[in-house]
Length: 125
Image (cartoon, rainbow, N blue to C red; front, side, top):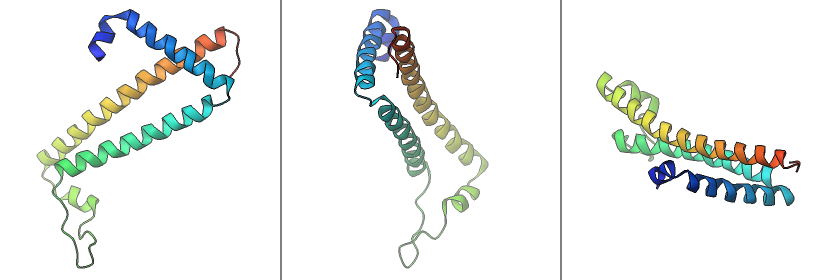
């Protein structure tokens, strides 16, 4: 997977070539901005999903009140954690967010390279 791509620059060139062709096609049909907006929205959803997943894994479930609502809101549940529990939770959050940010930075870098190549090719966005 990722290590193979890092060790084989030709595979990265292949990915960039495919992305360039895709970006040019999107430019031609006027959809590149829509795709970039969707990518941003997907990033936001992934960050929220990652945060929620860590909280579900690491935090004990809140007790439900008589009408099914949570008795203790998340902020209150976080405040009662011991320092080492809170630190472990934040470290796990950081690791998950670092992976998400790294993946999106890679995609962003490829998109920027594609757009730069497209601009140098003389076609406007």
